[in-house]
Length: 122
Image 1 (cartoon, one colour):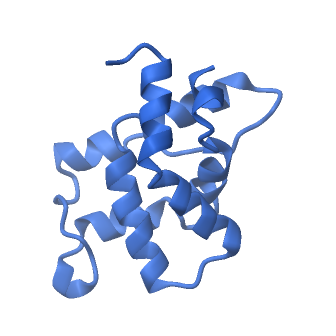
Image 2 (tube, rainbow, N blue to C red):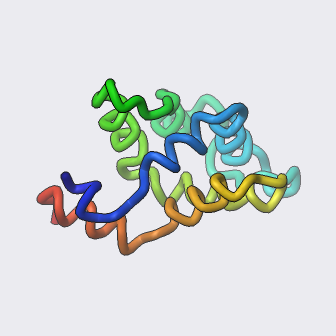
């Protein structure tokens, strides 16, 4: 219900993150040094890396509501990091319109705030 109120299109995000190499790219960008084209956010294999990348995203299936919940859990608390990685990805390779739109949605702070306040979070 909170997602519906926020207007956040998490299905587009799930499609982007679960498409092809999209999930391996953020990890690569997060762990590569800036001099090598990465962000240098954390070391590969570190606890911070495991916290973000321990579960991989899956596409949303209308007949399986748990896929919606899994996507939201993956995003929870990681939106800002994932947005930084996805934006870097967008700058380094040519992505389709749907992927670009999903990255913009990921960076939509107002929608994320509405989602958090709708779910009872402070």
